[in-house]
Length: 241
Image 1 (cartoon, rainbow, N blue to C red):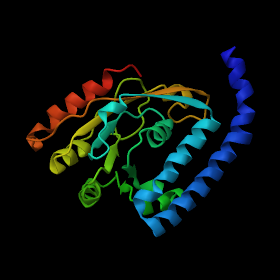
Image 2: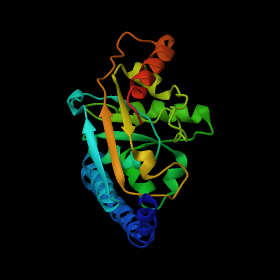
Image 3: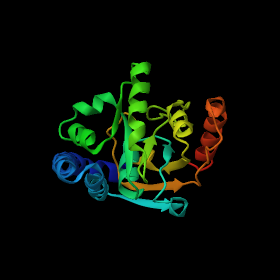
């Protein structure tokens, strides 16, 4: 039965959803550029929320959020999440409910409308092929993470192909310690079945975002990065994906 449903879904995916996502990306991207120019980056972030929710509705997917009581909207966080699908971006953008900046790979800056919009909103581009340049980009971005604006990292660095969490990189944890702000661990479940890594096998489904209690980093220094990484990884891994 599920195979039959997947076959029936294919024309909709290519004829309806694909063009819809392209259109919403251009329209919301252009709107974000205009709003950021007139009213500032924070005001423009609403277009990212609308973009994510529209495309989630069109897929369609249902998103359940757990643990929103763990967020203080006046507090800035370094948000750390697992990454198993492109749909993780829709889930975080559409349902997290706080102002944040993405840490994203440099190549996304070249995407029409989306790349310029992300730059105007203040998202952080890093060159993953150049460690020194990536660290400079993160240092330059620290001034943006204030007054309730947070930053999101996928510390695995890329989408994991297996259910097992990949090895974490240090950037998120170094930034949290340098800024003295809490880490907010998040586990996203279900998106792998909606759109697997390096695949076009899109199919409707359900996703769950679990927001864990924040981890205080006050009193930590760079000698504690490994312990902080391990603790965060254990928390994210405690929820089935």
